Length: 129
Image 1 (spheres, rainbow, N blue to C red):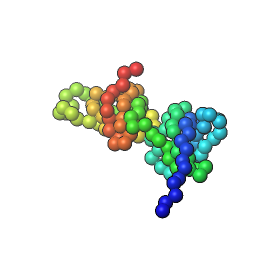
Image 2: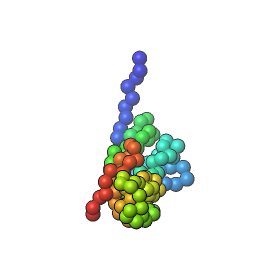
Image 3: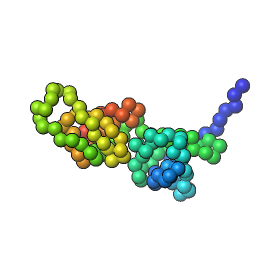
Image 4: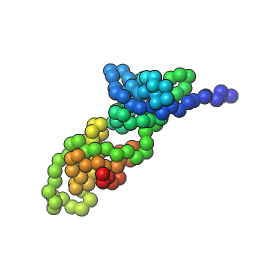
């Protein structure tokens, strides 16, 4: 037999990352919650300062940070391509403000906002302000 685990989900605001932890603030109690980097080092690509994320707590320790399936990112680095550079459907790599590298259509430019599927890291669409 397996004993049921009691987990709690707490909404927390991402504050910053230090040498060992992602640091969040519980939005109800204003207490800091440290999530070890070793839990998921790729979280750094999806955490935006000031955004809120559900954190799963078990035995008073964080065990997971829930990332939305779709998130809006700003293109921080992008090479410019001239129309006619290549065939239809061509893509290029860009880097978001969090450091995530994603392939996007050639028409996407720096400082534009794009919607990304966080499970596959695929470009979904350009987001108009």
